[in-house]
Image (cartoon, rainbow, N blue to C red; front, side):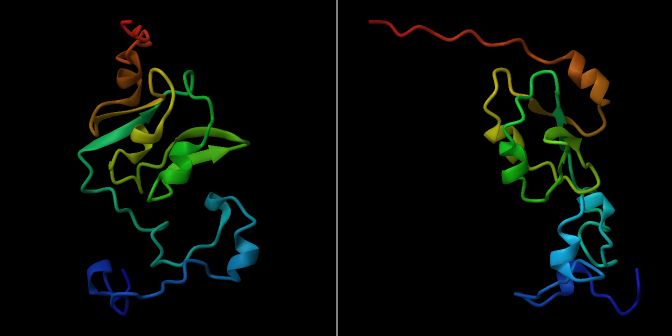
Length: 136
């Protein structure tokens, strides 16, 4: 990190950080992994080192409703060509909001230990829960 840059905990409340090297409106037309970000943007700096659990995405259950993408506070849900395609673990803090807002049964995102391989997590995916009938 450049000696002139402040850490996130040294910034003044209400600070404005400019994430792009060029005009923001023009850059926003590009996909996020094609944009030219500044070094002090959260896109180039990992904030995931404190995560204990991570969301794992099961694409075979996902209905691409984009609830997780909309509600993710870190922009860590990745999408391409109108489909969700995973989680950016360099930026995911493991808050679980994506899992909470997922409407599928079973959920297409579930939390697992950060050190568990995604393939292993997918093998443990729960089955669809049967709806309980109301007693009349």
